Length: 363
Image 1 (tube, helix red, strand yellow):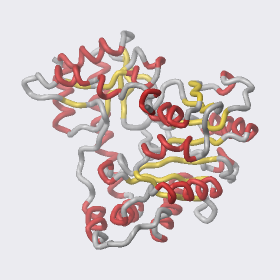
Image 2: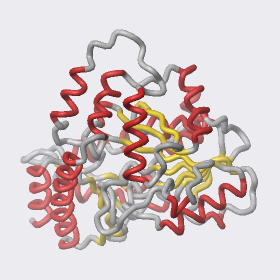
Image 3: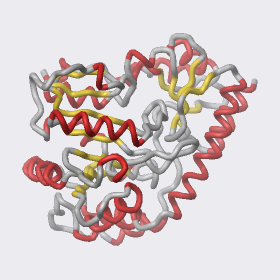
Image 4: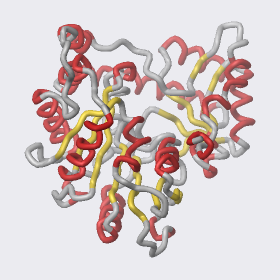
C-alpha cells in the first residue's frame, strides 16, 4: 500500500498529551496545530455568499478576476512583475506541497532537498513520488549530485520562524539553476515578519527578474483566517505553472467558484491583514515573555506564527511538562531529527486562551 512508505501522521502521536492537557480544571489551551480562531472578515464572507449560485464547473486556472488579483498581490508583496509572473490557485497550500514532486514528474532515482527542520509534508510529498529525501540547510552538504530535481526553502520557516536573507536565497537559486532543479519556496508566512523582514524568492534581489525554475507557494489561511476555505496559490515560472495547470486539469484539482470569489476580495484588502497582524503581535509578546520567564530560550522566531522554544531537554519531556499545566504544544521531533530538543508554540489561540496560558506558566 502507498501508506506503507509514509511516516506516522504526527498529530496522532500527540493525542495522549492532548488528553492529559484536557484534564485541566479550566480546560485545554491548544497551542499545537496553529489553526486560525479569529473571525473571517465580513467582506470576504459576503463575496463568498454572493458567488454561491454557480452551477457550472469552475476553471482550474481560476477566473480572470482571480488571476488578476493573484498577479497584483504577488507584484505588491513579492516584488514580482504582474505582467510576466505565472499564477495558479490551489486547494490550500498543503495539497500542492504534498503533490508538487509528483506533478513535476519527479520519481524514483531523483532527489528532493528539504530543510533540516521543516514542515513534514515536504518529506511526505517526496515519498509519495518515490523520490529520495535529503535534509540539508547548506547545499554544499548535498554534494555534486545531478540527481537533485527539487529544492524546498521555507522563509519565514515553520516551525522555527527563521528568515532566510536574500543573499542566501540567491545562492540557492543559482545552485539549482546550474543543475536544472526547481526551487519551491514556501512563503505562507511572508506577511508576518516581526523582528525581521522576509523576502520572496520572486524578488529581483533574489532572482534578477527571471522566474525560470522558481515556484513560490502562498496561502490565505493565516493572513485572512481562511484555513477552512482552502485558499492557496502558486506563482513563478510561467512554463512550470502552465505544466502544473495541465496536470491539475486532468486530475480535477479545481478550486470551488465561491472560494475563488472570496480570494479576490481577500487579496484586494490589506486592512484586515493589518488587524490580524496586531492580534498575533499581542499574543506573541505575551507568550514570549511568559516562556522566557519560565526559563525557555526562544530560538529564531523572527517571523511567522510560532515560537521555537527550548530548555535543552527531549521535546517529549517538554510536551509533558506543558500538558501538566493544561497546555498543548507541538514536539520539535515532528519537524525532523534536528528539532528533538525544541517545541513549537503557536500564536493561534484566542486572547482569552493565551491569557490563560500566560497565567499557568507564571504559576
